[in-house]
Image (cartoon, rainbow, N blue to C red; front, top):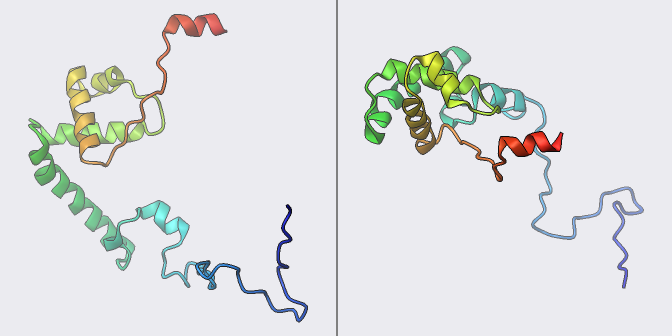
Amino acid sequence: MWRRLPPASTASGRRARPPCAAWPTRRRPTTRRASGGRGPRSTSSWGGYPALEPLPPEDRRTWLRDFRRTYLERDLADLGRVADLDQFALAQNLLAARTARILSYSEVARDLGVAVNTVKRYARFLEISYPVVLLRPLVTLRPRSFRRWR
């Protein structure tokens, strides 16, 4: 019933070959220099855009600024009507500041000085064009049930 596992190394001190040919035999580079500057710190700072890889940091900022301008001017025009692009860009910044928190549309609307439906529409545009993923709750509980559980 129980099967004996092969040893991790042979008696001669060499490592045994992996039992499956699909397993990788070479290790991935771990240092930033060996990986061509694509270490975890670089990816978390600049994102995973392939076009940013060969660029120096000052050119990366320019590329990202132009990418955002293109998104606001062209891609957003295809999605729907946005009366004020500057207001949408500000809403994008305000929504980005609320990352990983419960989103209150009325709070963002108050900060922007617009109606709640406008903020909902902006969030929907961001969700459709994929820079934003809204995580909705699996179960919605009424506030009264929260009080009962205390």
